[in-house]
Length: 391
Image (cartoon, rainbow, N blue to C red; front, top):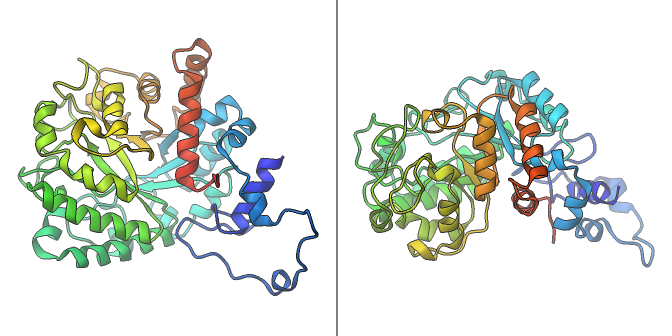
């Protein structure tokens, strides 16, 4: 198939993850050219080079090679218990991403087993993690402990923060991670042990923006996609979305504080995670920001909060273990609602539900409840963030 050939060529020229039997993760340097490759004759006239062939991988071409189910699978990110669980769901369902959580068997990272999981995927696989530092760290035992965001802003310079993130990013890339759900850009003065608390750099939006930018730059420079969270702002929320519904101040107040960091951070590159937040003046009753069309429109357009248009990947927060969602929706319903709202990647914590979610989504597309155009747009956005598309 022409696309698969082009993807293989792109992989060999360092454009996407993986080439032949050797698997490379995002952020790893391309392998040195072999002596055979160096001495190979140039292509005959009229024969496209590998780079030229790879450059033909465009959005419509990619879409034309994927079944409906495979398109939908690319939009899912699921938590895994360990290597065997991850390999099975990738092999059987071709999910687009996996999530390494606190419950994931440590050996998957410690023994560098991510490449064998990624090898089960027809397209590059994203491997995501929550690595903020402080109490939200999944690799402290492997890479050492980093301070919380609040401690970082209180004790380190912006440049030191960048260097810390760069080092941590290289460590993550070496373990096979490609996406980090960090930095947390919530603006908060909550006590350290509250739901956001010391995960926030500061109650000053300017300080949050400075330090979050440094952290995100370090991640990007190490080859890791940073994901800013929790849009449009959890810092002044009424509680913990793990335990129930959370209401924020009205949108007009968020524009003056919580949304300020996004104005400068989004143009720098990365993804955005939506919080399970009820926002007066923005979300509809019973529809938290993570599955809200109005919230996605605010983020994509930018103008509504003084920001810039955003065309990067949008992620949900966990849809399976947080009562702000599970008290209202099944996983299948929440995933459908999120994708229909304009989210690109739906996240939840176990692999067990993947087949039934995909069945549900296929039915939703067939009935028109989940528009085909929306699915295709999300697939292209995800593919672009993975480095698959070259035009």
